[in-house]
Image 1 (tube, rainbow, N blue to C red):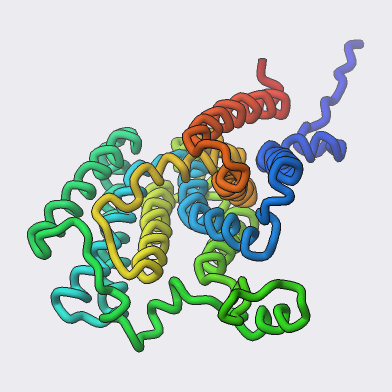
Image 2 (image 1 turned 180 degrees about the vertical axis):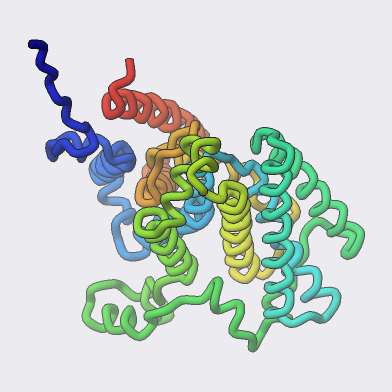
Length: 367
């Protein structure tokens, strides 16, 4: 009599701790962070890079990239790309600045106008991709050129220049600039200076006045995105839509709504980045945000997001942005020519893609 051996469902089998750790998408990025900190701890440990003001420098750069990397990571997990992020930054900056400086709008009205405009563009990107089934790479590449062209053309049309300045003077007295470019915790850092934990400048102010709001925005967006992706049903929909859109539709996932929402969120993140820069520098420029879309994608890929979708991590994208900030500022502290920074980014991208591919094959058992 023939007997059949009952196979255990692999989904119910207990995994070892090592296998669970290896399967984490942010593993490579975490290892990269450790390596980068060790390297610059040795080569730039005595340059002030890890003093209070040095830490603030690379943390701020990392936070700026984190804002757009979070949106890029969610969209990549959903199986799509948005190459118009950089152009959106320049376009949104002009939508904030021109109405304020030339038409007398308030800072709040101009900023709201920019967010509405950016979300509309994000919606159109997602709608066109879903409606036409064209690759998002092509659709958003077209949007990249359209937005950059609009930014230059409209700024010249209304202002006869490609740089709009005077935002700080017009926005004086409004709380909106503080929301994007202010600092919090000034009293705490003043106390740190009194205790001797951090130094003071020649004018008596602490070397670090407080935590910039751009860091608060980065942490807030990352926390919300992480919770949505890992703790909510919408996060399961994102993974499903990115892994196999047709299968997801068959089980009732509203794929079109999910992906359009992700394009809109990416546009929202780009506008936050733009507002932070406009109110910090008091100006907008038509070339602002140039190539930022690629930096955001690099941070997401270093953080474990697959180019094919359905796999990734917000925490990993944050680690990728942290690597970016530490290396960019670390090169300056060590005195290495800045030209090598792009070489490093390209190398990190290639290593991250190869590493993620190896890990995915080991986890899924592919050959």
